[in-house]
Amino acid sequence: MYIQQKIAARELPAGKAISEVALAAELGISRTPVHEAIRQLLGEGLMGEDSNGSTVVVRLSRQDFVELYELRSVLEAHAVSKIANRKLSDKDIERLQALTGEIKTLRSELVKSKEKVLTDAQMRRFEIADISFHTFLMSNAENAAALKIFNKVRYLIRAFAARHAGHTAEALTRIHTEHLDMIHALADGDVEKATRVITQHIQTSQQERLVEYSYWEREALIRNQLQDFFHDENDKNVTV
Image 1 (cartoon, rainbow, N blue to C red):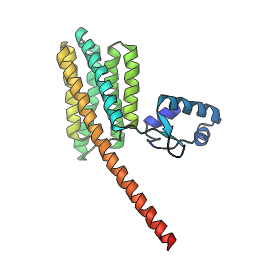
Image 2 (cartoon, rainbow, N blue to C red):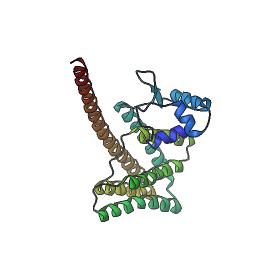
Image 3 (cartoon, rainbow, N blue to C red):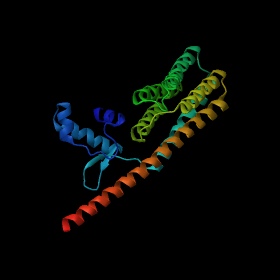
């Protein structure tokens, strides 16, 4: 869906008011299908209404993120344990190695550039490789219902989490190492190790997102306080 794609691409950030007229004009269609699409997103909880009655992209709470990551951890731990019990084929292992190899390539590019973090374009490459890696694992578990839920959970986390400032070389090294550990555990059929690695991997990601969320909360509070201050100052000037 077009609107979901714009949310996932963060072109429609959390808190952004949605205009049916503008979207209809952008798509070159009537307002009716846009209205129906927005009604569906309201029903799915991806949109809501603000205090002014405007339709906006929802902003997930800290607890929402905690619960999404808990669900993701359960889904992926189950998937890797199922895969480890029957082991991956050589072809599947090669595919996973290729996907995690992109993360190693990005780290090399970052070190060579002498920049501190990845650029936006590089982060998009990272996200594609990382999402593909985890989706490939879920697909190999051969549970269509779990894969469907997983895709929605990943979508919500990606769309509504604070945007990454860009991974550092240290973070890329850690992620690449954890992905390799996962591949080795699956290749060896080590269920306990595979479950442990994926659980720790997701918990670390959760902590990173919550740190970003806390930063966003502080920044939003400062912005609101400044807006209130200047609003009060303008009212004083008008009165004078």
